[in-house]
Amino acid sequence: MTQIADTLDATGLLCPLPVLKARKRLKAMETGGVLRVLADDPAAIIDIPHFCVEAGHDLLDQTDEGSVQVYMIRKAG
Image 1 (cartoon, rainbow, N blue to C red):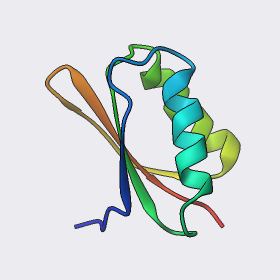
Image 2 (cartoon, helix red, strand yellow; image 1 turned 90 degrees about the horizontal axis):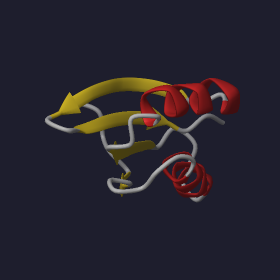
Image 3 (cartoon, one colour; image 1 turned 30 degrees about the vertical axis):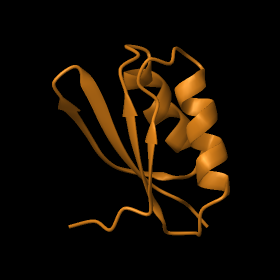
Image 4 (tube, one colour; image 1 turned 180 degrees about the vertical axis):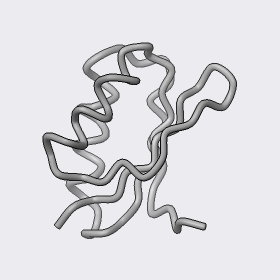
């Protein structure tokens, strides 16, 4: 099981806020830390994986829990 360092609840936020808040939260975390992001914005399905590729972070997992998407992001060094 992946050790989660922090959780960001971005439900109810629309593009680009989930990505902007994830970027800010990851910046404050240690390298290798895992951020769990909860989002319900349909655009997040595209935006968060794209952000991870652009920023060099690892998208470890992307799942749905009902109407909420859950992303596990490992902070790059």
